[in-house]
Length: 206
Image 1 (tube, helix red, strand yellow):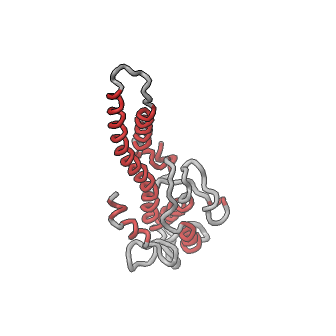
Image 2: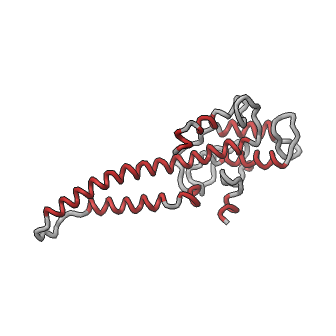
Image 3: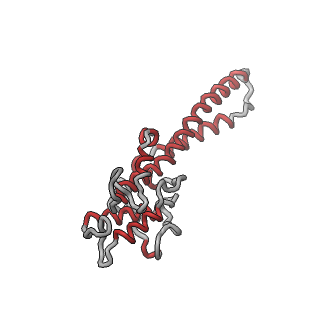
């Protein structure tokens, strides 16, 4: 929650410049490698927001659960004289919902990327793809910092990583490939990567 409340997310979002790429800090030129360094932060926050939503709903539900359980307990005491036809379904439903919610929030660490995201990207993903493909890509192969610079392995790695983040930024289900968020021909589609470690997801899960 701190990264969301502190304004850090706003700071990163506003690092996407008019050139459509990301800069590393204020008053600096945009740089292809920050497509991953800044884009990865926003991709993580995008997933975290969905988790926070569920946690907040779970917290609200827990408060309601205590009230319902208190009511159930009071109702049960009224029927302690031997009545066996007390309707216990509301109380059972509350307990079942709580167990399901706990199960949904217990795998946040390792499997959170597989969870469905209810949020869209926090940056202009198509514009960033334009910057990467038109300004950073070298026709002979490889990627560079910006026009006028030479290609290198470092920028090739992180430009491609940033490109992959863009392509999957609108995908709510990590198991379903994107359809309309790939700039250019669909053959441009890359493998999904982990926004924190920068490796292909298949390798991460291995």
